[in-house]
Image: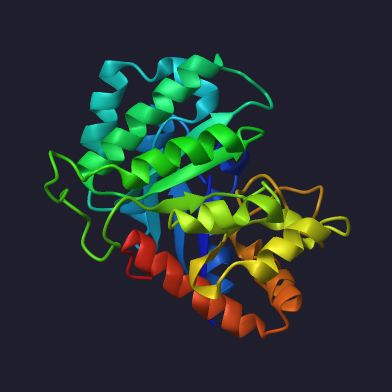
Length: 274
């Protein structure tokens, strides 16, 4: 049964002592691909290194909203260079976070806009973080999706195998069922992570049941958001199976159906071979 973890952070320090073992367990759990999402430039280089070392790992490069103040012109140039690597399949993790507000909101919005422009330029989809900022995120993405391709109406250098146009995923979706249609209308995929397994997550399970099957992705966001039955412990890609199982129960379909559909969706969105 193919499984793709569409959002992991295997470069984080929580895996320093046993990263190879974690990756080996992912293979044993039938994962055919992992997308490792960067949060800053150093994380981007580390993600690319992981992707070079392991054939089933791919990289997304970007600057998280927490570090928006570091998204200088020089940093964006370095991201542009990183994005040309053949194992880089997305720009991310980018977006807005008004919950922790670790960077000023104007700086977050500017960094988000600059990296969306970069994604359009290099023809890559985006991996978007949105926390307590859904109005601004959806408004910015709507404008981005509807704007002409870079430059001046010409087609961008789209990554082979990815979808046409400006597309991406709302990672670890948390906006509730009431905002789902807006996200779907602009062509975005919906990433569901470990909290869908929690007892009190009825709204998230309602989202998981309502998303069209061809627009659904599963993810761990490891080392965070660990699903039941391992909640409270470090998360890892092998646990994405529990996300698939919870979604299957919510939809009344088999785990295999969810695994196959979400793997196909990840391949289509990111142009990966897994």
